[in-house]
Amino acid sequence: MIDSDGFRPNVGIILSNLEGKVFWARRCGQDAWQFPQGGIQGDETPSEAMYRELFEETGLLPEHVELISSTSEWLRYRLPKRMIRKNTDPVCIGQKQIWFILRMLGNDADFNLNAMENPEFDHWCWVDYWQPMDEVVFFKRKVYQKALAEFEHLVISQGKTKERGKLG
Image 1 (cartoon, rainbow, N blue to C red):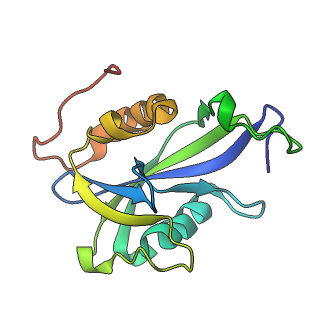
Image 2: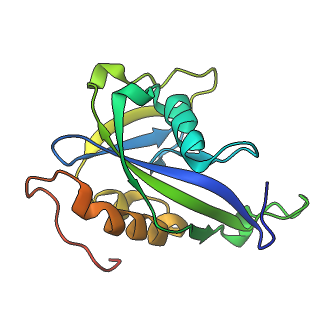
Image 3: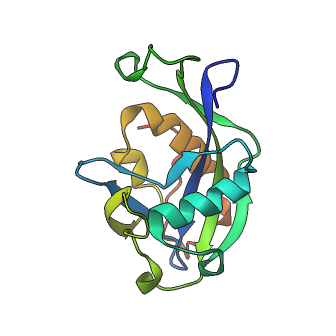
């Protein structure tokens, strides 16, 4: 499902723990780290897609997390030209995402990266709140910055996050 501007609807998930750290995961077989994310199916609301993607990518169930908030608007990123599949109709030039901030209620043993037959991630860790900005693929950085900035005041940080208003 691609909108009239060429963007695929998607959800992004920032999962924080009680120490203000965030879940950071490595894509299977790659040196690429990201937050969980995935497409919204035609019959789903963004929140339904978020819970489905959360389970598919982390093995977590709704009872393992608390939904804190979502972004106030769609956040968009464009794919680099070399990644655009021009043989599709309609052509997808990027993604528009509703981001969610969740708080972990369960414990680390609740994660199961192999919940699905084809896992998205092969490793995960808790990292400082702003660390993903330095490690995510370049074309997602502005969206990550906007989502992290919008949610920063909601994360229980106990002084462990640092203000980061501009891209570095």
